[in-house]
Length: 260
Image (cartoon, rainbow, N blue to C red):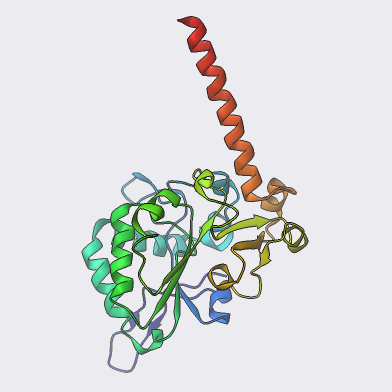
């Protein structure tokens, strides 16, 4: 379930709207979240923007592109968030930093993106400054921006920031599946246990706090997406796609060589 930006008001005062909200799952564990639209979207001016540049097979299996995420008011709120942080990054940084000083966030966790991604270097660096300026708050995320994180975050991470790589993207091959923390989406809990992944169903925070770096996520129970995924995981589907593309490129290279 999606919740719209919260607001508070007292008689005689203008209601305050929060940048950070809580969906039903995250509210249960006391986590706030920042949300953007998922994948390629059409903006109010008719242009298109890819919020998730490294999305692979996940784009066709994404829970954030169906259901309540498609409601007109929800999409409008997520697009407003995107335009704020993309087009006026200094104002976004100011507003977010100011909001995080509020007492309701003391000692809390913020999930950066329950939908959307770190779509540029500048946007990721903006969040890192926000984190450093909010030492009483903790942050975490899932990300498919593997190369961007390895360039900008891994050796310079804020002390209050944890992350989990997420399979199903075009940069899966950059993840060491034996040693680097990562999440894969399985058709059900039984499948992830059989693969020796840790089930994070009890709390989304297990994605960054579990002892094992192998994080298993049962697929959302959305019938048409479950049917499309079958018994595969996001990771196995991406590996199959990568192999198909490699073979196609190899054949094209051979034909080019023969032609010359």
